[in-house]
Image (cartoon, rainbow, N blue to C red; front, side, top):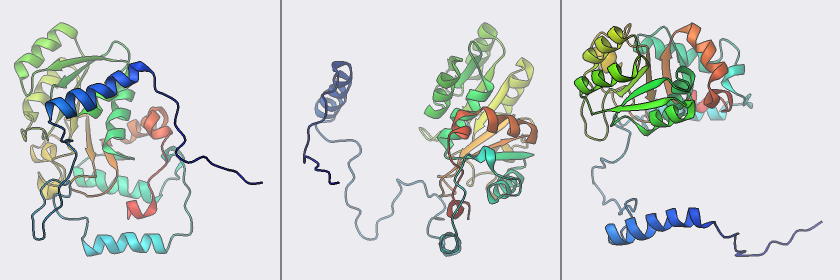
Length: 282
């Protein structure tokens, strides 16, 4: 049996509620506000230039030992069990790496996710629920806001690094979850973590600190700002994208072993995503 495929077959027209949003992007934003120059357009990099726009802060992506480990993992692979990490057997390579990262950060245990985005969305989703207030710094990463929406929780913003405003919001909405970045990629500022921990403890709130931009670059041996300030045992959860200083593709959550079992069974990004691949773990 043979099949004939028409070339340049027109796709079905999109409804107006979509095309209006696309017009706002291409006409209002790109053509009118930006003069026709797309913000994601890259210029050729001249020879000898120093490239400052990437995430590989420590230049690890080309480290020979790491590249060699990845190549060896691919060459020696005899096929892998591609499944949700929920079903991985204890002692798997992913579990071993989770314990190694947890030890590095001074945590009891940890969970690897497909990305920092998946880690944040899944974590907030498993902690908050309908009606639970989640206090987010206005500069907090979009993945944290997405987690609140996924949980059906109540997003309550507070002014960037403004602890007085946070306390006013807490007095109004009550106990919940406080979510901040340790280091904000938008402006380079650091969160007042010691003060945040004190506020969380006084108010009975949980605290999530996203260390995506500080893990590997700050703290003892790169263990992050929470570890640098001696707050590892007082911050409930730390998350991080390992696609920044670690130059890999994964996310990480520090947690207790007891919480880990609950998370793997309740986090939709964890349940419905496959485990990491061998060369990524390597």
